Image 1 (cartoon, rainbow, N blue to C red):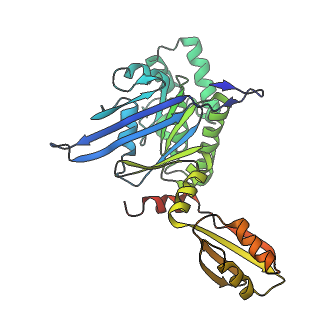
Image 2: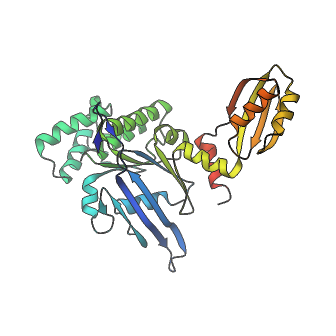
Image 3: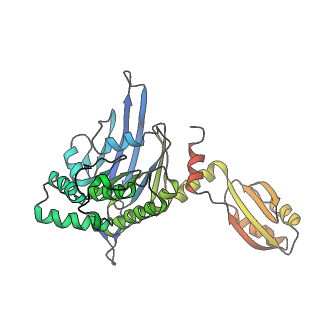
Length: 326
């Protein structure tokens, strides 16, 4: 963890989570490969997204990382500790918000957090101050002495985050943190996660089916399907992967010359694969990035570019392209 001049925690290249050929097999003959040869590196201080279709191996991976399942093959470390030999150390340094999360519904928010704090041997004075502070952080101060059984889904999700933070973890595992709650509550949770990451430097490992959520708050994203890692990187890195596979799509509008002349000029640019005219806009498909070359071709033909942009896929579309055919 490193502090910048402003006091805000900077992301580093040091690793909070690392897996090497991590695998988990099920069945009498290990025929079900839930996680297959997974190599991941999560840097300290980043929000890392872990996405995949149902049955991809996300939950199995998370259970191995927090010590609930022993790997069949390979190894891993969380917060510098081995996921098989040093499980107790990992539990001291991590917080977990599972899906679904389980609480004692007949106890109040304060009583629940008091119980979990005692599991970490947090002293009474520190414990009581931390409980009040955490419930204030997740906007549940008014419900501190309300029984959890009366909480709404959104309140339960926020309380689950407070519970996961009771031991001031270095690494936070979140499984579907906004599932089942309304858009306003979901945004509140996202803002809480981003603030925790920025202000306290907590490394977040986030599994979610909401691609919009993952794109908004994650620094890098890993895509997994059928137990195998297919791609990892920022959203722009994933775009580059899809570009290399499918090429680039541009939208172009031109002035001073007819679109037909512009189209003829663009077709001569090496690497242009397809071109269509739709509603005064040129739709161009190229093998690679050719923005400069296309702009030069239009200028040489006497035209002026009035609009030129790449059709950038959002994470949802990138995800579907990357898992296509797997």
